[in-house]
Length: 422
Image (tube, rainbow, N blue to C red; front, side, top):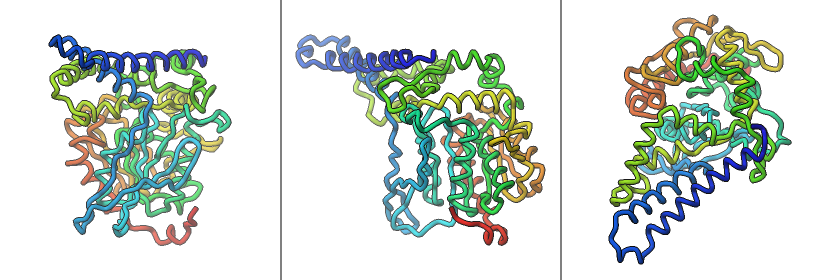
């Protein structure tokens, strides 16, 4: 599979489907066809509209679309996205709220690098912005990163997080969502051992696979069944000639999307069939529920091959985080070194990706942390998406997380004095 031609053929298939959709839309909408009032033409145009939008989304990075936030003064304050740290594989960005006094809560939201852009956390950011200064890890699409920029694996990811935390300083509260939870825990432990003055105040881990073996899911079962050789053969390709990262080994976003869709194929097929009928009847809108969801869901990014493979091998198969045996540049990262960073875990009772038990395992690993610095929450009835972006997050989890942040905002004076800003 490691051929540019394979990647280019996959992109060609996507592009062809987008073109067929546009052609069907134009044909079905041809004015002269109105002389023969036949519902078939409306169905052709509706299929074309949905198909064109579907396949066009797959290569477009969504916009954050967070333009204003209401302040305590009742005014709308302009929001701009500012880069604070720039790196080849990802940036640290801030949602700068203009004309508003700075909020005491400083939150670093660690976004997943698991196939979707950081904009997957758009609603999470929007819900935190009225009460916090929000920073986000904005990971880049690997297809756009030249081979000359080198590799990027789980150790590099961890060191990126270390740099971002050091840049923001010890007054930061970190929230890691899903996939980055184990590596964010490791980055915090790395700072505890190497530069304790730069540790954040608190760490909230939401639905992450700290110990994948704690509860079985389709994801963990897949990780056990397949060998690393099989995975490399089936999933890894070289970026084609169209992009700046030509020749880079990646796990392509389109392959990831096919995997995502296959997990709930019946539901997705029904959703698209219903949308085509709505478009034909004139009942669909550009920003209706279907389009809002799939504009984000279908926008996928390539992952560096070494990051994907090392995640499967080291986090899922060898369980290096769960066994407290993770190393960075040959040095062991001892999670027990975390002694004064408050840690909270959040799980969804119906999470079928990172099942209950996987994330709360972090608290057992923090052997040096007092019990009064540990907390956990299991949200009844919540699935994976709901615990960070759905109704469960808005109504129940977000208030608990903000209370946890407020309860652990006091800084040890010696840590303040020792910290040297980056």
